[in-house]
Length: 543
Image 1: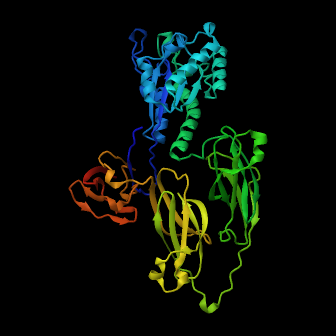
Image 2 (image 1 turned 180 degrees about the vertical axis):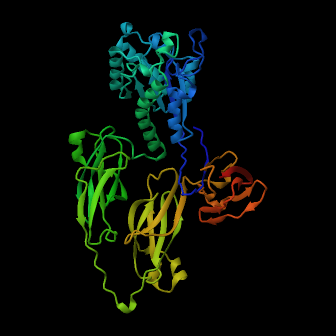
Image 3 (image 1 turned 90 degrees about the vertical axis):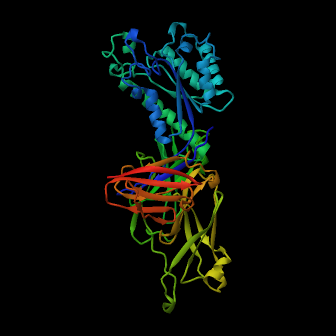
């Protein structure tokens, strides 16, 4: 599978917008009939070379699906093939043909079978049909793991519907039911074509409806593969969620949640305090009792959060705790809305003469994809151990006591032995590929201390990067003139300059992984990026 290097440029507008471009090379093959694609046939009034009866190529269901997958990752590829000959003669169809071999050699990760419209109900032998359809699937899989999504016919019939439903149940494939679409004649092209057979095909509305139903199931396979292959998991998918808040106290928040439509999916929940999201948790703990009601797959769906002593809502006032799946339209879990009143933590007794406001500083010792080492201390009390929350991609991973030995601090700070004990070590597993961020947050008051640690896994070897071959994305463009640049490797490794159309060079301010530029004049600007003696220039329009 071809690998691509992506350099992502984020440009901050007014207001700041943060966008992340993803690169997940997947391949999807769609096999169908004239609804999937048909060449010009002027004798019946059809002149297109796409899904029959769609008003334009971009209106057929294949291109609509392609648009959906490209919005997830521009590197996902889609190929389609008309295999109406298989429908008409599945028993005598020769699998080893040049057209089908283009799909076989494409090595699809997901196969979509959008078939059935040309099958004769009277001649349909269901056991034979299942045998030959599965042989087609196995031929295209070519001894590889391949996901399969199967739909029934647009021109549905009870016989064919049963044949496809029995097929997916037999082989455990994902099913798309198109039944009922043809009954709504606005989903057909009747009145738009003189030829009755062309007019029976889906209109633009019908193509959209086919896409919507297929994409509802296909998107689940796409998200699961991205999660499995690239460890970028969408835990906020649309679904039929059910769950329960078992405990919501000043010390612990716990419960369970699952998606009844996809029991194998891990679910992320939002814990809200007074209707504001306080923390996101992944429900991945064992919860065996669920198997009794939802089956063997319903295992790891429990969540538990131990509330730190220093949270801001330990203030002696009433607060409402709610929990919901992170999907935007999900409802709150049962028993959400618990009202708690957490007393303020006792203030440690302090000698009034020595009462000094803490002055925290922090930093990073090393950053690897398996381990990150950081440090933090109070400049006004070097003997004190500081408790911190480690945030990975702005979400709490774990809370640490920064109390491990770091000898080089002794020389930097003082001759006090306790000054060396301010390090914490974070072990990382299943880190998602691509760009990530790490932050240090004080547990006692939720305040972020120090700079964001931007890093990428796996790490790039700069000497191997060909910037001319790299995919460079600039967003947004046009813009209002305030820029922020984030790259998957250190900005200091590249030379970056900004020019206007007259060749005038503008100053830019580099802070860590960020570059700031402010200009109020409208016009065209040029961002010049140099790396490994090669150069790329991107146009930027300021409006």
